[in-house]
Image (cartoon, rainbow, N blue to C red; front, side):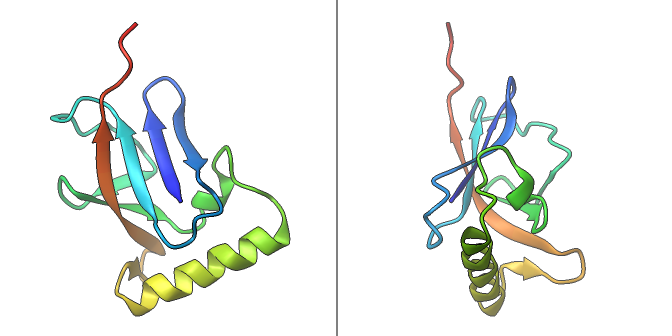
Length: 102
C-alpha cells in the first residue's frame, strides 16, 4: 500500500490491495521535505501518519472487507514496533520520486 503525495493533489492511496508493504512516496525533489499536515517526518527516510487517516484518503476502498484487512495489517505492524500507540500513528518508509516537469 502506498500513501502518495504530490503538491498538486495532496495525499492519495495507491496499491490498496497490497497489505504486505506500506510506504509513503513523495513526488517532490529529493532534497525537499514537504509540509504535509498529515505527515510527521521522523527523519529523511521515515514518517508517521495517523492510522485513522489512511482509510479516509482518496483511493481508499470503503468496503468492510478492505477495512478488516487494513486493521490486520496495523496489528501486524504493531508487533514489529511500527505503531506509536500513544499518538495512534503508523511509521512508514519514505521514498521520493521526481515531480513531473511539463
